[in-house]
Every structure is written in structure tokens, then in C-alpha cells.
Image (tube, rainbow, N blue to C red; front, side):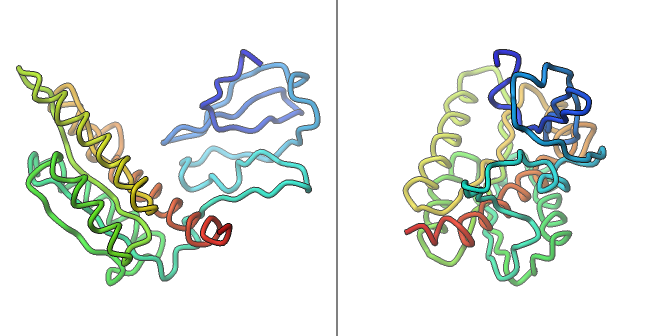
Length: 223
């Protein structure tokens, strides 16, 4: 089992002894010994953007188990808030635009989305928690950009933003999605705001829809 990364999402194709690994952008495949995972079943695969095909790439589980998952195809009526940091707006606005396009692609109505602008990434967590506690939203998407400078200010803001967004979700019980870029330089940020590394705002929006769907349709019924 040591050959399998526990963080990897994938399924085993027994006919070719391959594990198909899913990252944010695509499906890749790595050979390994299928005998290590007895009882698995094969699934027909095709190479598509990962966020469009997650439902098709689930591990088969026993009929005795329940498998709960959110879906971007089951978001009708769900409401979302987007908190956007104004600092480095030339990066955060393309991230927000990518998120809005992703929501539109999956039929989320404009009337079900509220956008809140804050000065910077440090102010995102308290705003996200306030929105989550309002009871009006099924997920809160947090978008910001922090670029390393000459001082340790970067580390303070990045750590505060990450831990703050996590705490907002834990304290409110509403998924708060971390869509804040933490980059070494401007080039890295632009690559992730619609450049060669894709648009991380769109990816974060997909995560928000999946988590909102999971909580609303499944986890809320476990209480």
C-alpha cells in the first residue's frame, strides 16, 4: 500500500493495473499492482477536466456502505456569498470573475449570489464568519491574493487568512472555502488568475458548490 498516496483521489482499473489520479485540472494515470486492492471493480474512463468528471471517478464501495458526496449538478436553490479582498484587485477580480463563470455554468442564479468586498485578505475571515452565521448562505467563498514582499508581513497575513477562514467554517457550521492565493511573486498570482495554471477562483467555486450540496442534501439530514 505504500505505493499509493493517501491524498490521491483515484480508482483502480483492474484490466490494466492502473490507478487514475485526479488533480484540479486533469486525470492522470500511474501503473501499480492491482493485487494490493482486491475486490475493486473497473470503471470506463476518459480524459476530461477533473471538476467535470468527479462523479464518474468514484471508488466502488460495498452495498452495505453509504457514500455521501456533493455534486455541482444538485445546487438549485442554494445560496452563496463571495468575499473578495480589494488588495491586489488586478488579481482578485479575475479570480472572482472565474468563480462567477463557474457558478453560471452550473446553473446557479445570479440572485442566489452575493458579493462582499473587503480591504484585504486579513479582513476576509471575520466577514466570512458573519455571513456564514447569518443563516442566508449554504457556502461562503473567500477570494484574496497575498504576494510575498521583503518583510514577514506576508507570513502573518497568509497564516491569519488561512486559519481564520478555517475557524469561520468550524464555528458556523457553514462551508467557508479558502480561495486565497498565497504566492511568491506577481507572476505566480497571474498564472493562477486565468493564466497558464488556470483560474483558482473557478476551482474554488466548484468546491463551494460541492460542499454546499453535500451539507444541504446529506450531512444536514444526519442530525
